[in-house]
Structure formats: structure tokens, C-alpha cells
Amino acid sequence: MPRRMNGATPTGEKARRLYLMLREDILRGNYPEGTRLPGEQRLAAGHDVSRVTVRRALEALEADGLISRRAGSGTQVRVGATQRTRISADFATLMPLLVEIGRATQARLLSCVYAPAPASVAAALMLPPPARVQTAVRLRTLEAQPFSHLTTHVPEDIASHFSEADLATTPLFRLLERSGVKIDSAEQSVTATLAAPEVAELLEVSVGAALLSIERVVLDDTGRGVEYLSALYRPDMFRFEMTLNRISDGESGHWAPLVSEPKDSSVTER
Amino acid sequence: MPRRMNGATPTGEKARRLYLMLREDILRGNYPEGTRLPGEQRLAAGHDVSRVTVRRALEALEADGLISRRAGSGTQVRVGATQRTRISADFATLMPLLVEIGRATQARLLSCVYAPAPASVAAALMLPPPARVQTAVRLRTLEAQPFSHLTTHVPEDIASHFSEADLATTPLFRLLERSGVKIDSAEQSVTATLAAPEVAELLEVSVGAALLSIERVVLDDTGRGVEYLSALYRPDMFRFEMTLNRISDGESGHWAPLVSEPKDSSVTER
DNA sequence: TCCATCTGTATTCCGTATAAGACAGCTTGT
DNA sequence: ACAAGCTGTCTTATACGGAATACAGATGGA
Image (cartoon, rainbow over all chains, first blue to last red; front, side, top):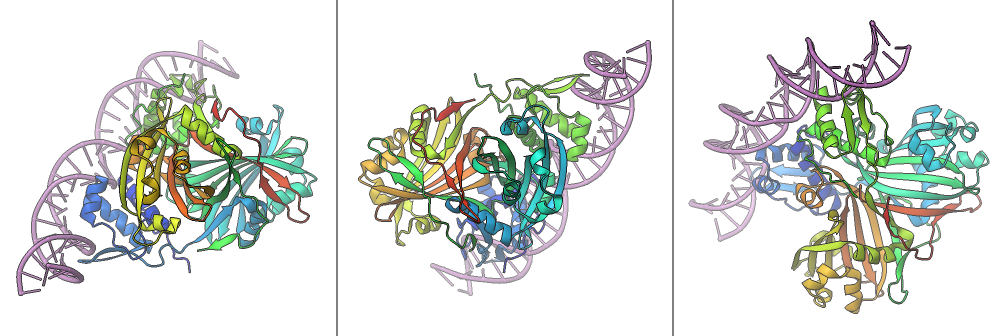
């Protein structure tokens, strides 16, 4: 059973940062379960902060249920701390995964407006200047925990084929194909960003937390841009995984992504 | 010519965060060049901070040369603000890219120690308990701007085939292959993290900035783990790009990564 | 048993980030 | 010419994060 977290992150600058870092170290397994972490004094010295600050971070971690502290003994990483539900996007099976995500998670439509395309969107989709797009914002949730914040832009003439109700229930891919769009390819770009206040609240992370950011431009078979996606993921609940195969190629050689048959169990509990 | 940045990021919590966010918006093109951004009052209200805080963020942006402010007129995004050198890892050509990066960038060896493998590393590489690894930390730089922080772990018996001098000059792939390792495949995981003080200083970003994090486990043809890489990239200088092709597959269909012949121009100026 | 080490708790003090408000001067558009 | 809106500059006041310090109690190992 996934433990409740987000028990009020520390307010201060250094305190919260230390909290986020320790938290990540624990979730990543840098401090294996059951390990005693360095004493408060040591942490304070190591991170160049006062012990009060360290304590604030530890208190938050304790509230999250990630550690247990005992006077005299020390601070331990709780067993089971690492066991969190997480979605891992093995991208060899990307599309089936997305379908599966659509089933296993719930989406909430936050907003849906029709307006002139922002310059960057218009450029990415290669739309002529006075172009209008439908801009929809959705929040995906897995087991009551929000894990992704999606902003999609679709040219108005395509978007007019489906309703807002559709948006709340059906993956956008389906809607596009139902609208007669023949999806051909996509360009995807992965980066990291900070959580802005607004997004942070929705994703239930602290402001300034790191988020995984994916931007995707989808083209149909005529080369026309049909969707611009800007997605933000909680790194503790979603990561992007891939398997690469080495292709020996004489001098240099290169890597090739492994393309396998779609497998099941795309939503992984660990 | 890349403009000098990092003109002292704001010290305060909210101020720096606002700075980082605005900066990213600008570099991403959310505020196209020449655009006037919202007035200070508006920004203050929108981000729920005082105007003083907004000003601090704007001052830092101005020091970076990203914006120009004029009394009465407003604050504009400078033309040329977006023009930064950036490396984009189109992963269909991953290996040639890495070779190219090795040529176009410079690496500095920060440390290199032999020690028992940390638990998480040992687990990932599937090493028997009393396993020793070589742990090397390197910093990659493009045009005097640091852009990645690499920590590699290699089993000691393999690492003993090359010297520290090799590490500073030659990509690790080469060294492994020269050591007789037959690289077969790799598992890669992409996430986002916050910059810890130590790393932040090395990468010349402000503490708490968002970084792109890649972890990679490399296996040889016998399935043995030969390298564990933990890499941190500056998102403004490096992003992970890929092209996906839609494979119509009846009901669901899926995406397949595009595997192309290695192309040139892997290090892109834009 | 003694001692080192850890957390639990409380106190004091300081720097400064932030908020709130006021006003002058410059631009731009009506 | 006027008004609206913007930045530049200054003021005052508050809140709070953070450092430094001290001590008590718990724990576990020598």
C-alpha cells in the first residue's frame, strides 16, 4: 500500500532543498533500506548548513514515512520506503503503454480553450500565422496520486471533431484517429524543469521541485503538424526507460534502440 | 558568440525561482524574441510575490543579457537571447554522437578512486557482494561552458586495463572495448533532479536548478555489467531528442523509434 | 560500567528576503 | 495633450530562515 507522502515540505530554502535531495537519495536506493544515514551533525557539516536545517529536512522525511528516528540510535531508512508505485515508460512499447496508461489512470480535464496559437506552438506545428488551436490541459492520476500534467495544442479544424467530454475520457491519439487524422511520426524532446507554483499544486509536489518535461510534435502522413504536447511528469512516479543495443560498425559503431514486440505489464509496481 | 551568463543568480528563495522560471520560458521560446513580457506588477500578482522580488529576478535576467528594460516602455526579450549553443542527443545516432561529443567537447577528470561498490551500483551491475569498482567523476565542457557531470562505475578488474590519463582523454566506450570488453546492450533511465551545491558549482548553474539525469547500465555480451553511468546534464545545453514512427497495428498500434543511418552534424548550433 | 554518539528540545541572536506603499520620470497610444 | 502603464528609486516594517549553542536522555559498543 503506497504510503501517504507530501506531509508539508519544509518552508525554508536550504531546508527544502536538503529534504528533496535526501528524499531522492532514499527513493533511488542510494541509502538502501534499513541503512542508518549520517548523523545530523555530519549531515549539517557535509551540506554546509546548520543542524536546525538538517532537522527540518529530517522531520519532513519522517512525516513522509521514509525514515524513522530514534534518540541515541540514529536515523534509519524505513523498510518499504522504496516501494512506490511507478510508471515506467519503456519506449519500445510506447503506444501500448499509453493505451494502458489510459486504462490504469484517470484524467481530469482542467481547461479547454480555443485561441490563436502561441508563437512557439505555431512554429513547431508549422501553422500559417493566423492559426487557431484548441489548448487543453489535463491532469493524469494514478491511484489518487497525480503524476503528469499535460498541455496539448491541436489545430482548431481537427479539434472540432471531438468534444470536451471526449477529452476527459479518451486518449488524444484515439480522438485524432477518430477524426480521420493519419498519424505518421512524432518528434520528442526530453528535458528537466522546475515546478511552477500552479503546476506544483496540481501535481502535489513542492514548488521548485524537479520535473521531467517532454515535448512532442506529432505529424500526420502529409507532414502536417496535428498535435503539440507539452507534458510534465513527477520524476518519482514516472521515468523514461529504454534499452539500447550495440551495433558493431567497424571503427565507431552505434547504438540502436531495442524494438521488441509489445509486452504486457507496462504499468509496473515495484 | 555565446553570451556570458550566470551573472549571479538572485539569492532569495522566491526570487531565484522566479528567475529560473522566466529564464527557461525565454530560452524555450515561450516568450518569443522581441516580445514584451508582462509588467512587473502583473508578474508579481501572477506569481504571488512582491514587486521587489520580481525586480530581483529581472535584474538577474538583465545581467544575463536575456532581457532589456526601459522605463516607461517595459521589459523586452532581447533578440538573440535564444541563440545558444546546445547539444541535442538524437538518439537514433547515439553512438556516433557520443564520439562526436568526445571530439567537440573537453573532459576534465575530477576524481578517480577504487573502492567497494555502493549497494545500489552493485545491485545494478549484478556484482557479487565484496565487489570493488573504479569510480570516476568527469566534467564535460563545450566552448568553456560545462554541460554534463558524469559519474561512472566500472568493475575494478576491467578498469585496471586503463589509466587515469586515459580517462581524461578517451571516451569510456573506447576504453572498455580496448580492454577487451564486448559491449552488447544498455539499459537507460531518464529523469529529472535538482542541482546539489557541489554539482551546481561545477556545472555553473544555481543551486536548486533542474537537471536532466540519465542512468545507464551497460552489459557485455555475456550479460555482465561493465559500466554504471550516472550523468547530469544542463537542460539548457543538452536535451534528449528522438523521432518515433507510428506503426499501425490494427486496434492499438504502437510507436517505434526511428533508426536511421548515422548522420552528421550531431552537435548543433542554433 | 563507562564513554562516544546520536536524537530531542530549547534558547538566543542576526541577517535578510519579502511585503507594502509612495513617488518620480519616461513611453506609448488615444 | 492627456491618460494609462511602465520602470527606476526609495522608504519602512515585518517575518522568518538559519546559525550557534547548550543540555538532557537514549542507545549501543568497548
